[in-house]
Amino acid sequence: MGFEDTYRLSAHAVITNGQGEVLQLRATYGDKNWGLPGGALDPGETIHEALLRECREELGRAVRIEYLSGVYYHSVYRSHVFIFRAHFSDTGEITLSDEHSDAAYFPLEALSPVQRQRVRDCLEFNGWVHSAKF
Image (tube, rainbow, N blue to C red; front, side):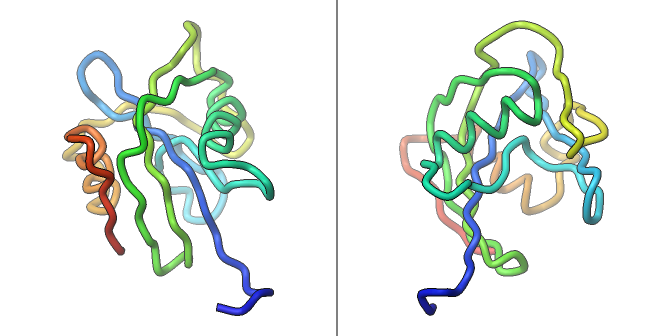
């Protein structure tokens, strides 16, 4: 990889409700897919700072990071994704940004295969940070 090549890093949160369902957001861009809250790191940000900022922007709520559960390479996007277990640190309603049209909680089985694996690794975390390629 050359010095001027671009490469993406992103941080995403696994947030569950009382029934163990996983929070997903529906994008207003691209394929308008459902995905975990979070997004790309800004220059100079740590992965933790990026996750806290992205959740505040996308959800209108603060989160508390519990742990980093996995780092995954996505060949389609040429990016590494950092997955964190997080919880809301405040009370209130979710207020979506312009980047998302809807928020909903889904059972693990309803997630896409890639999301299901990343979330399962997170929810079954045993102290060992997972790593995989998709």
